[in-house]
Image 1: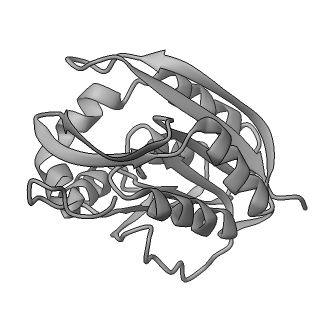
Image 2: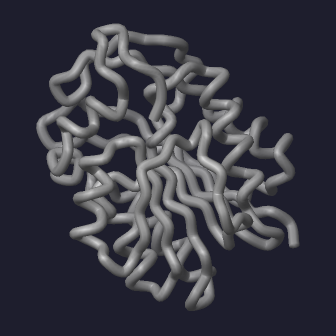
Length: 211
């Protein structure tokens, strides 16, 4: 995730503090679990998958590794990376920022992005989407989820922390992916209430780079 919050903490520091509580609140998002089922049904054993914003490794990296994929996860939080390495030892995790990450073995058969782009500016969200799309191999997939909206530098309190968030509308996401050469196969929005939190709308999108 992105820039320092206005309260002085960087996204990495926020997620270092949130740690396993994130998994408790967000490990069972129905739309995310359905997206993982959709993706794993289309990937062959040994498929190379990048999990952007891998958090604790659950549920994304764990589900992909269980399906026989070769999973690399990246996250800005050192604590999250440590948790993921202990929870999903079959996958590989490294501390990295999607805005500057340079994959050594791109492209990937699939790239997953479940909610990692919110704590940054709108231009950074757009650039991150373009970067992730560029890492998808011909015939490969990009599966993403976010909280949609034409939102720029909005101050909120999230899991006890003051953070500044931005996003793009669903239509803007679709436009960026199309401009990056991906075919959008399906997309939808769905409500979700995290454990102990406020209800929020989630946007899910499955896209593919033509073979």
